[in-house]
Image (cartoon, rainbow, N blue to C red; front, top):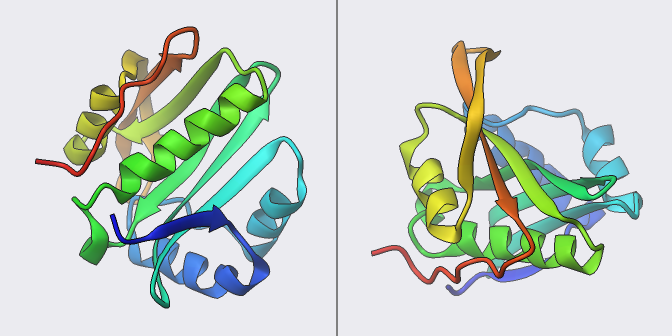
Length: 158
């Protein structure tokens, strides 16, 4: 992975929002949501930057002892290079620093590459939320990772 991970900064917001808009399955949040994520202690917002290009980003929020992975997006041209895994591992590490017991997420049931990544890292399927996503309508697969054991390390995808 060539991209470097860092905390999201105001200077990243234009690129972050543009990447989210280019990703049909991603949440399309207003700028204020990202600004709040950068300011709140119980939220982490990370970016992966390759040269001057945003390769991806992730946002996680701690609610009591559970980290909710709110969003993770890798630009299409940077996929299958280990960036998603690196962002996810960074969210897991941050969660452990805050003494979280679990990391949980929802993923589109048809997003096989993301589901495969989460399962390689050790996430388990916890259930389904019927009709959770819109545009297009799709079920959400609920997944979780207990943090009482180390997450699997995932290198570049085969």
